[in-house]
Length: 375
Image (cartoon, rainbow, N blue to C red):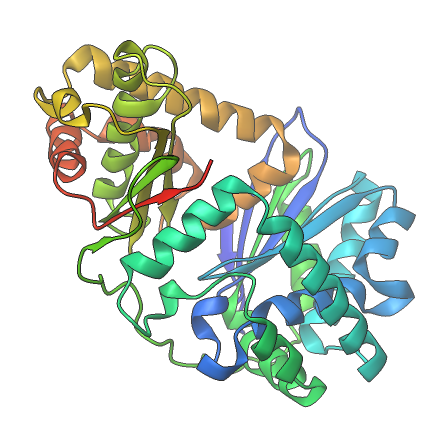
């Protein structure tokens, strides 16, 4: 069940009789929306939103209800999720409405969160998958393109950010018209909609800021060559486009499981990830040593390979559905991409072998980005 409030807030409720209640609030604002000299502001406001509010902030509030949650900042969106008992859903949503109205942070909160983000950034930059995406994006998109920015932000931009700027960011971007609330689990849809209406309907609609264009490709980039881990990236269609789903399936033919083409050819230590954005996608392939990749692309995918890739994608969706917080997030992103949950489940069947073959042709061409990382 979906609904849109008079102030523009979008709601999606998916009942699941097997899981506890969970929600995900997605705001259509992320690092792509930051001023060039304030890289990191979106991440900073996410932290201030999470740690501040009535009764000690959302973290402490959810724990008091017997629940838990977390928050994420990405290129196109910022999200907050929670999993909690049924009796805690209404007060938690009321807290979310309070946080949408205002950002109750102090100068001391600002400085504390800056230190926490600096420590968090050091941890993320030690994670190989994260670094591979960050470096690939920075090279794949044109100079100055918002998609080339780090999701963590820069140390200089973070240090320069002020509390006034954080509050202005919240006021401009955390309005109801930029929010999607997805609720899943053992819930009654009509009851949830009534709760949401009571908590959020009186929040004043705010004008949606115009977003800067993003996703413009760079000229092909070849970085350091030699030993180590080879990383290649291709720019693909945006999330919500069938071609994006087909590219995911083509990646599955190439790199999903031991029976994929890379596995059958004896490669080791590979990964393939399709990063989905609102204006583009980025397919990133990484492996230990390049080997003879061209031989893997001589023949297009056959029906059996595409069928296997579909099955693996369905299995991945099923795993996400088992996690209540991830399922709520999946529903919110599906809504943002113009899909219902039912259409999301059927997206793999909607891609024909011809669609996957066309995506395969993209991967068989020269990558937009190619570089090596030290082992």
